[in-house]
Image (tube, rainbow, N blue to C red; front, top):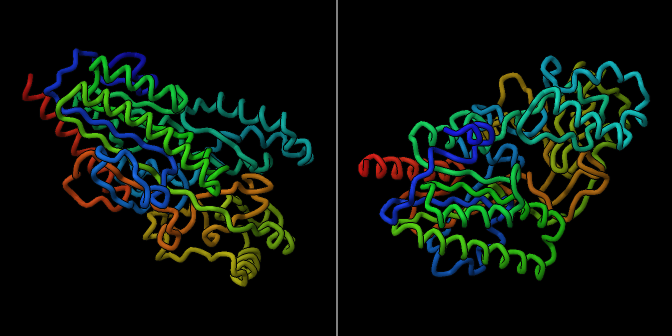
Length: 408
């Protein structure tokens, strides 16, 4: 494998001339392209003849995409929400020496930018690295789960990219780490015309940001979907020109739920007058609050107060097991309060006001949370979960590897 490929995981084995007789797989992951937006819409008619609604996992892309790539649950990969409790290994440990400063100083926009920059450089993490609105004084309590680029080998345990490396399949992976969505499409089309790779994994991330802002605007959504559809039609044409045996699949990690309203959960907790990080810790995301307790009184009163609310509920042990987030060490929270579909925590550590659309609600009770799996052929198996999608990708890897072995 080339030095460049080892650095960014974008390219597989040494380039060769393509052959129309080789099987060719193209998997396009469009972030937040939900079943709710496609179930009643023609999307690449005549090409994507197979359509499946896919149940996502609870949470966000930081948990869903690792399941897609590995076929394993969050408890097995260690990937779920971005932050987890681990003061001993926190990349923000150095910030402890400055926590004597007032919060308004530590959380100044310029200081926050500096904390993020220094922490990422010192830790040398190559994955997704953000601090959002987490108070700087709390950051030394937390580590980040995405330490490596997950679109490369060894980014996630048992990843498809590890299997691609092992099998010797010529592949390329494209993501936001290198290009914009439009640039990714252009780059993938060039590669298809060159016939250098037999497996293409294309991650388009910008549709998620669009839906966060505009999911309630039907005209804008329709226009944006048609724009992606045009790109994909071009990509498919190049794939068909490169091979007589093309598997062309469109998948997503989750959907997008229109915002119904907001609730100030922080005010309910603050009114109880316990102190962070002395008595407890909390991470307030847009759709869930995760708590760690350091004395029983704080646990009893905070949990008791929030259980009186009708805007959400604490996850049960059964739900945690079903979602694959029953971590033995409770690294992602001793208790997790999940908001009702469409109701956001406002303010949260993601901002004072939530966006017009959000994901990360209960995947069973929120119909807008479902992901999609679309293909130009029947995958030959039921595709109902993200784990099922992973199985289809692995089957194509083995088919390509077997074909290459026969041709050799």
